[in-house]
Length: 227
Image 1 (cartoon, rainbow, N blue to C red):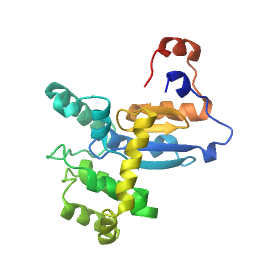
Image 2: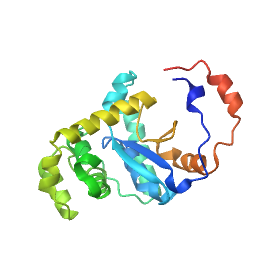
Image 3: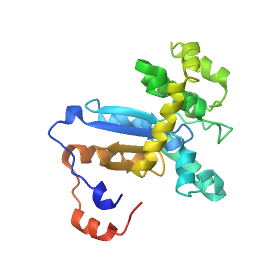
Image 4: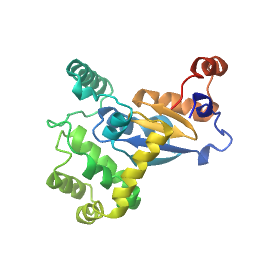
């Protein structure tokens, strides 16, 4: 896929039906911030598909080292997260154990597992991990959190081990790689993708009015980029 194929002006004539895919992993604090911010920025006029993925698979595919593997980067990024959370009044308590195995939470967060309760499940899991700093791979903590959110924890946790939930995480990750995603949070609308919590406003501008930069010059400078 070339950058030429990626650039596309959105159909702004039917905003109410505009679909946005939100790719995330519970390992990512920036995905947590994006979760807290996305509805504030985008409102409720878009159809948002929540798609949990394995961030580690994205990193390994593109041969990227995770932030936690580079000591000064981990230190700097975590301090930046503390500053951002404090400035924006977002509860932020990083889990003491990180990285943890996110697979259980990712499966719970799929539409295939949680159905109509998907938003509530994801919200509860974000609060557990980055709001309260609890273990994201501890079944007892997860069950307690889901029950506290008035969800059927036992049924959800049973469904998380089902074939549909397992395949959904794999499919989401596969789709993310085919699009060219290399990290989370990422938002995809049509063939355009936006990476990072700080890209939310650009996403909103794009779906409402399209880009305003010199697209022809951008194409010239990126026509050698393929994947």
